[in-house]
Length: 88
Image (spheres, helix red, strand yellow):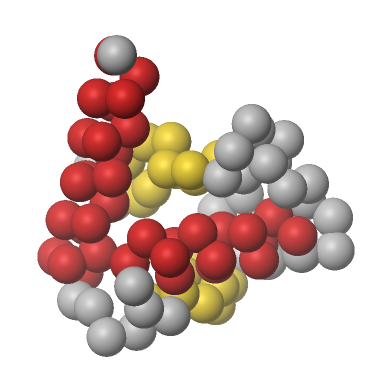
């Protein structure tokens, strides 16, 4: 979701096995896509590269050196931290 206050994890949809991210960057000239790649690379500590969906709201990201369970664990941990911070 471009136009947010910050680039951050918004939600995890377990049924669709998809994450929702918000980004402050506009969806112009791939700025939002780069922000998402940078955010995930920083969060996961490894390369995260957009492989499909550059012009779509639904994107596919390749995460190197992490299996799906490790990625999911990191995302759930971040989501828990975000919820904890919001409740303060």
